[in-house]
Length: 324
Image 1 (spheres, rainbow, N blue to C red):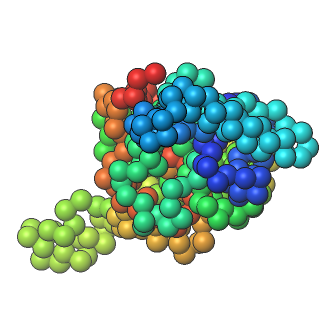
Image 2 (image 1 turned 30 degrees about the horizontal axis):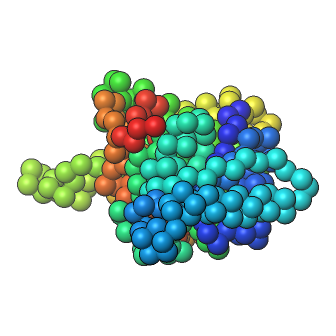
């Protein structure tokens, strides 16, 4: 069963022992017996112009700030009950760049960060959050500021269908397995209901009237045929999950499957909101030979509509454009 071994929590200036996202991150690290690091990133001293404004040398400003922040984060760690070992990493620069460099330096297998804005709709696509989703090689878990202490509904979006090239299909299959493993782990830990979701559309259905006299009938047949195909793939996927978890654990988890006709960028947020989902686990674009920015328009459209926290996972072989 896949688990996290090395977790980093990206702290904000106002993170305290009661911050829901911090509490969640600590509990997850404890449950996984994972190494845990508190990362704080401050704007570059030189670019902030503090030395010019204060007349104090940059190194002195940096030294005092490092001491202050290390004491603050150390006190935060000491507040955890029962006692909990954690590392502290303080860096200067752009938050998303230094976070990705920390991931590359220390091989973190999960990044947890509180979203910049409480409402997803307020978040611009150029924010640190979206840069992390696009460019960070490790899974990124963006939590809401008012994160629930206990999840009830976790959604995992899987990509089914036969439209992939051979190499891309292998990447997609492995990504689906990773998504299922991670979401199952989280649902079992939280005793939450796991919803495995796939939304599908049938290409060119809006134009069938150009070729046939009864387009509604043909469209219905096409959707029914595609549904049967997706249902078969979903059942096969659930059998694979049962083998991975073991029958007893799978039965206890009892994942709910949803196969929904319609565009993913419309139907997935609708389902998440109707279920009152606490977390959506989703993959980014599963295409081979693509390095750097690897989150597609569909994923970004979905993210912009969600009101729940998100765990985004890259496919194997992803290479970040940010250098260590």
